[in-house]
Length: 341
Image (tube, rainbow, N blue to C red):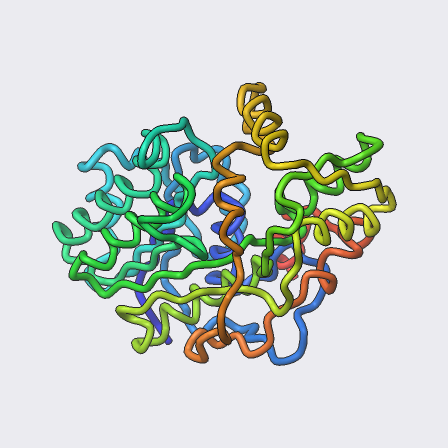
């Protein structure tokens, strides 16, 4: 299917880099082949793939890909946002991937969550209306709900409502936790066990159904090509459900540094999370993360067939060699080999 232009807002991040590479028809950073039955070739062939990001320097590696452009964009600036979306033409597609995991505490959520998850979608919707672009794909989260247990899930739910009420040709994708060779999830668990003799773990029995980043990227690409996805929201998850403890233990075994796991009672877990929130940099754990884990991040049913993911890739297929330090190649190396092959 030939389309003119795709704009990926927040395209320099973890999911965005894989999506942009998939749109460009280039292999990404996983050295592990996809399982048989997974859609591989993109059904789209866009003329232009524009990556819009707050800091264009962080997206320079994507310029190695064919037909990819990178532009700096402050989504607070309506003039700049209209200029970026307006260049797509009315047949263009906008993808919003902007999201955060942490923010200051407030009810129903703090300013950072309000901006990233509600204000940004509102600004994109309004810009699409002003410029005549109708097709919008939006990444939310499994369990997003305006009445959810955490600021993260409540703000994601309110952001979904903005998109649903937009009058545009929207599609929402709601993944569980996302894994991949360059993730900050399983790699974090492995790194923790390289450094610490024991892992004090909150919410050890919380359940997740991790989904491969390449499957998330492919779901977005397939949704762009399928009119049946317009006006629909799709849960997305991998083939297996794990407890948080199982994921931590797996990361330790695969990395060669298995450590004992110490279950923390709820009260002590919240004290730990509150302390971690005040350390420099992004917190490893926050009280809001604990609130999110009160709701299991799992699907109830199969992935919708129109997303084209007949056989989602399992976590162990990709991550076992990566966590062990085998078979992991840098994103830049893979892109260079793919572009110049």
